[in-house]
Length: 239
Image (cartoon, rainbow, N blue to C red; front, top):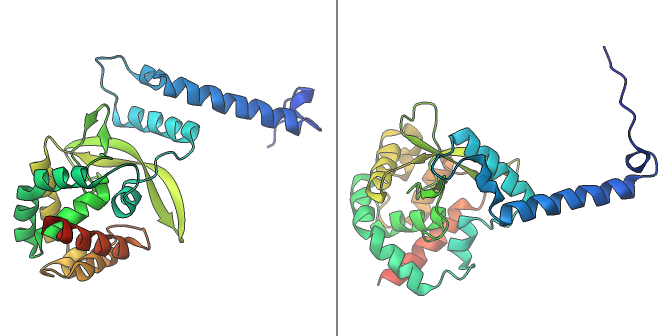
């Protein structure tokens, strides 16, 4: 059964396409201004944390209004954009080094590769996944599947579907600290048969990245190249 369409005002029908376009752009501008001025915080009170679904809604609205201003952690890490300079990179590597060494020992790979993976997914720690207003400490972009029992953080991310980049809101794991994030990361890779090809690859960043890609860790077709390139940079930075 079909229902009759409501009659639209003249400005929005027939030859009113220009008027509609102008009205739509005005609404976009209003929403962008609203969020830029902190209006997005109205989804919850100052002392009331958002649910994962509420955070996802806020992130979705922010993504629509701002129109893709989030360049992406991976681009920041590999290309060195957004002012993430050498000093910030050094501080990040120094902070995570003990955790990277512990995870690397479990995985049979170089600590530089683990550190590079964290840098790639978090933009040298400058683009962390957020849990409301707090840092989720999820440096590896690990999503929260149905079996995850911990806290969840909803964030806008870029996925590749049939080679095309698509922005989505996904739910990610949230950790109390970085040590927990690295431990969960190592356990996930070591226990999941999909990532066995990535294990015990030593200093071979390309082999490690290829094992992750074959296991479906990321959908970016350039993921292997990005991680390999960044691992070489980390090795140079460290030594």
